[in-house]
Length: 106
Image (tube, rainbow, N blue to C red; front, side):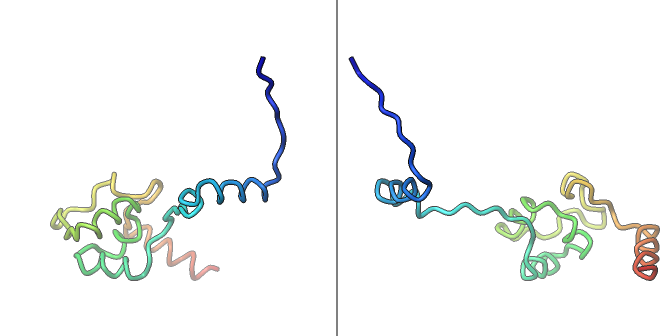
């Protein structure tokens, strides 16, 4: 007959056990990108994207564009809607005037 033994490890002891057993696992760090840097923004502008496009572009699209150095591919047409962050809208004259009004009012 096999008997199961259960015990609890403190978080500190569990980390020590993991470091000792699998140093490669503990060496890995996870990172999630949540915004573009000013250097990445400048690179997008050099590739022909507008400031508004660079500000509203989804991060995975930005990453792909910068890795592949993709110049703005759609000529004078607006950026495709599926490239935009959820909730990001095209900058229109009404939005620009309203935004200016809010800045003045605050």
